[in-house]
Length: 192
Image (cartoon, rainbow, N blue to C red; front, side, top):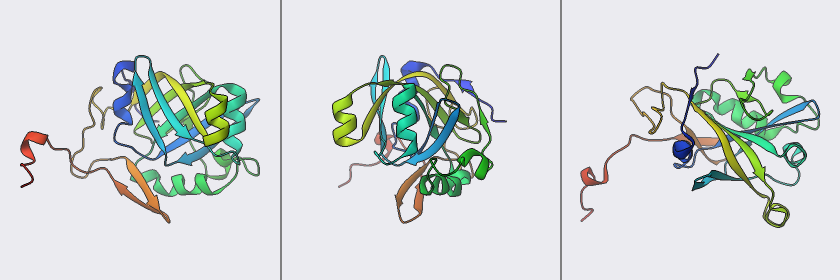
């Protein structure tokens, strides 16, 4: 089971500010689903808000629209294969949690599950915006609880260490890259 520590909601945006690929979980009417999303981002601080693109064709979309909730799970390299797999199968045809043996935990505020082994988790309540959902597949959520693996996030900042777990970022064609080492702009040189 994952170790999780609460993240202050005022710092929740820092879990996503660097643009990681996320795994979206949802639950409604006794069904849970899981999908991948490469397009997500933080939107605001107080209250914290996020945006994520969820295509009309996905099973998750119906669950999210019906429940008004979802979780953004932040995977690491160890979950890259799973991230691809759950993004390539439809929850309307298969229970992906059972098919892929996905361990999960209950959310503290929402009913959508938290995927074990992730680096961070953002429990969200849908902010209904029917026009942008229909026109652009863009969903907005208010972050109502945030969690992080204390090994990689200290409550306010990512701890990127050599050999440590890092978030992944989808490029295309099954290719990802990991977040790199942080640096201070004052140490970066002038670029001349």
